[in-house]
Amino acid sequence: MFEIFEILIIISAVSIIISTYIFFRGSGNSERLKVLLERQDNLQKNIIDIIENNINKIDLKFEKSSNEHLDNLNIIREKIGIIDKAQENISGLSENVLNLKNILSNTSKRGRFGEILLENLIKDQLPSSNFEFQKTLSNKTRVDCILKSTGPLGKLCIDAKFPKEGYEKVMNSKTKTEKINNLKVFKSDILKHIEDVSTKYIIPGETSEMALIFIPSESIYLEIFRYFPEISEVFFSKKTFLISPTTLWVILSSIESVLRDQKIKENAHIIQNQLLQLSEEMQRLEIRVKKLDSHFNNAQSDLNDIVITTKKINQKNQNLLKVDLNK
View (spheres, one colour):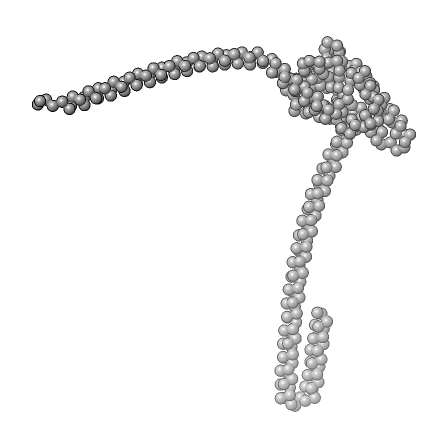
């Protein structure tokens, strides 16, 4: 575009030079000078028109380009906003994951996490009168939860502080030898915890004859039996068993069923008395219905007699009307 302007300016300069040259050579010829001046004016006008048109086109293109750039900038801003929002969500998720990792890596916090999960499962399944959390027993130990039921279960103690460090070491083992050693330590931790729970939470005459150890992870629960299938014998000998959320739900469902049956048995005599009273009332109702039916039958018989008497009276009245008194 600027090259065209340069060409036009050169053409204008050349025309001016030529006109000046002719003017000086033919200064006496006024007619020729007039024609040259008119041509010069026309040429200048054409050049001005061309320049104005090109300037307008440049303005339009510049405006269009500016609008496109603004639109692109707005789109970029929107994309950046979406990216920032996603980054905030990722940061928040990362913080939550880190918090959960910190909870699970800390023994006391992880124990509290297991207690909360245990509490939620029990509260959703049983009435509040059939469980108690953080109960202090007669031997001064505090159990995470005690389930109150009738029958052989009695007061069943549940521990929620399973040692997870050994399992994590097994999972993070880098060599076969390291894994074998970590498995031995993990098994030793489990056996020790079983012994502790059995000693603390099985009290003759006060608690159930068995106790439970709650593991808040199905995967760890399955891995324990996969690595140590022989450990089941220890469970039975110590009367202390590992449970997962799924097995706990089965136990709670069984307790709930027992409690429901117990409620039915406790209220059986009340139900029986109510049935006897209902039977007596049905007998009274039957007697009264029969009496009412008898009254209806008597009333119907009386109505029939009245109808017959009415017909007789009507017939006699007709006969009286037919008598001729003149005879």
